[in-house]
Amino acid sequence: MRTTHWMRGTVVAAAVTLLVAACGSSGSSTGATSSGLPKPPAVPMQQTLGQGEGALNIVVWAGYAEDGSNSKTVDWVHPFEKATGCMVNAKIGNTSDEMVTLMKTGQYDGVSASGDATLRLIYGGVVAPVNTALVPNYATIAPFLKDRPWNSVDGQMYGIPHGWGANVLMWNPAVVKTAPTSWSAVFASPNTYAGKVTAYDSPIYIADAALYLSKTQPSLGITNPYELTTKQFDAAVSLLKTMRASWNRPWSAYTDEISDFEHGSSVIGTAWQINANTINADKKITVDTTVPVEGATGWSDTWMIAAHAAHPNCMYEWMNWITSPKVNDQVAEWFGEAPAQTLACKVATAGFCQQYHALDAAYAAKIAYWTTPRTECGDSRGNTCVDYSTWTQAWTGIKG
Image 1 (cartoon, rainbow, N blue to C red):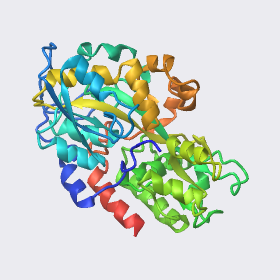
Image 2 (cartoon, one colour):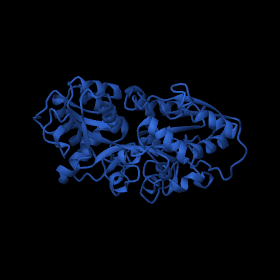
Image 3 (cartoon, rainbow, N blue to C red):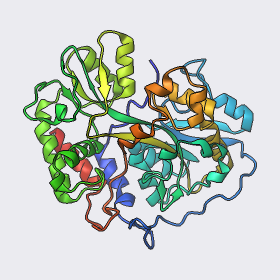
Image 4 (cartoon, helix red, strand yellow):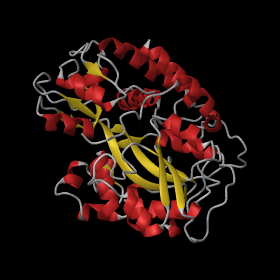
């Protein structure tokens, strides 16, 4: 079974409260962006690419920097080292919160950050703006992943998109006879499949409830599931507390969800496409997936460079290498996600890009990508939104 981001959603609440400080307030930022958010701390952007420094220290999701240790045929680190002379030291970050902590030590040159970490890194002054002109492969990255709220500020990119995917609705058709088309299949109360519904174990899952409410209770005025006023946030939390009675157990390790479905203790709930693919490959049961009519949350990972990287040239070399067509395809197929590099689909295994909707902008538009909640709403509401530390506290209460 391939290595994947199985610990992505595990959260240590005590750490989160400290880590979100830079995200929930403007800190040393001055002025405001065109979107109404404060400007990040002024961090210089590299202007030219020089000689590689001979080393590279990075924080990565498991499966993003394979060197042949897990599989002899899966290795894009040693070819990079041979091509650039930059020797790679990769540190696995099991959660977004852990990645933020590691990057704040100043010991790493870069990180493969998800959207629930990126703004914390940007507004904490931990990462620098990225000069995309120094990354030739950026030109053919999927346009719908560029200049987005989780990887840029006011038109300035703070990273290079790497890979992405949706949090889909998955079900066992042997039990769920009618294919669901709405998230009401999990949020409805009472629930037909009470005791066998699963959810994603992370505070960011509150956004899933908010997205559903944005479509089913438009009077709440939810326009962005990550920018919630207290009233909107309370409605999402209330929905999840009601839903909790239907849960089997929330999952953070992808292996837990796979096991629960294969053993029948879960029959419907939120999932990653790789979970469904693995279950179907195991052939113990069959599952189906869809992006419901309300849309879905999801992730888009971004390679970011440290504000004070000791090996900045090697980090730029890595960002270009990891988003080259062949390598980006290797990572995506090993990890189980859509590649960000459009040309990766020219070298991908037949059917892979179609399976993960890699070039499907309409599919991608249905996804509300993880973005760190801040007090600044990013619109005329000003600083009235609920920040991530409160999301973390609420999630503890929801799980009981």
